[in-house]
Image 1: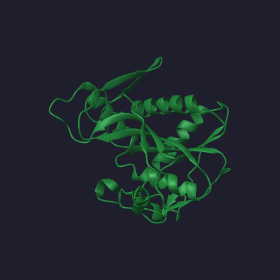
Image 2: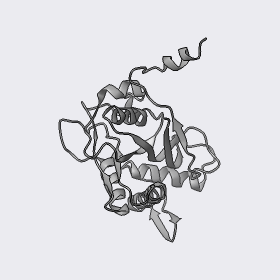
Image 3: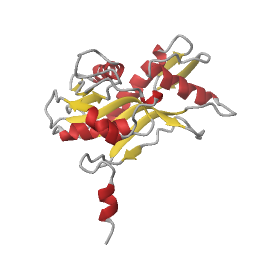
Length: 233
């Protein structure tokens, strides 16, 4: 079943000729959640009855905003509302099976889980078998390269619903490989949420929250040839 991915913002990877206020805001939020300096000038956004401020040297408001958004999305989608849920963070490049060190997406997942309640846990069920080169620095992006390097240790009942969490999505390969590895371990992934979706062109509304569907990655058919040959009569 295709993986449903919900991003909070779409952000430009490179500035365009006419950058708008919402373009700067979406970029700053994505940077803050990734652990980078938001840059630019002071900004604020309202979610519900609360206003969140962030800007140069002050990423906390943007992280709080994304946390609140994620809590709303996850809580609204839980069925039943008091059901059990595991948030599984996609590990960063340094999070390996050789150590138990914390990593950023796990920290973010814990913040979200704590804000929802005791029936939601954030568990680091995924780790890399070795330190991985960052995708932004030329590291692998495709699921068929990433899947063999991922290791999954289920830390809760495999029957409990799971969702993936990552800071940003570009090609979607990390999410596809992560969902496939969890499935291979006996559990299932219901959906994924990310803060930012990278864009190369300016969109009408960076906060329109377009839901995407990523095709399943099949480790036994890593290049998808089965689907192609299946259409031949």
